[in-house]
Image (cartoon, rainbow, N blue to C red; front, side):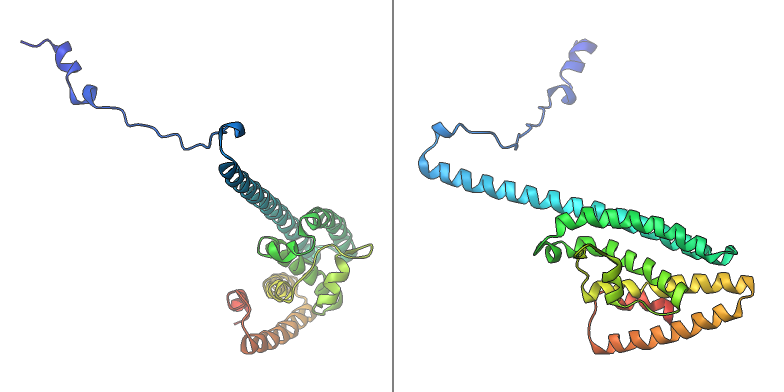
Length: 234
């Protein structure tokens, strides 16, 4: 008769073999132990690996900086929307100016990664921050002048020294201002609460002009994600 200990030792759990673990990590092969042809191939693929690593590292830096620009641009929007709650609107613009200086510092940082052809190569990663920035200064321009900010004005606000810190494509500009109606609506709702009829009329006229312009863009050609962004105008 088998003892309980013998039965436990002979159980399937005890007898089952442990799965083999394959180590797929690349190992460094001494260069002197391989032939010239293999050495050339190994060197070639090592260069490929280093190039891809550099690309992904740069891409991640652009994404992180773009997120920081997005977050700080949203703070500018929140500051500007306080304009209906204060007696001195200039104080709101002064606060926004301080935050704008911080955004420009971030654009200086990201501009290093977007030199030359990289501005197009990493545009998909940089454009969320650029669009959010355009939305923020677009609301700023509307509150001050009652006008839609132009692409030239955007580049002017981004200019430090010789020229703009980053390039702004037509698509960046269009998608940036297409987010503006949502913030104008929020300002309009706040103005209604304060009984400011003139501000409401200004918002209504602005949004109608925006709707006309967006309809022309939708009929004239394809702009990625534009139809999703302008639903607030319907």
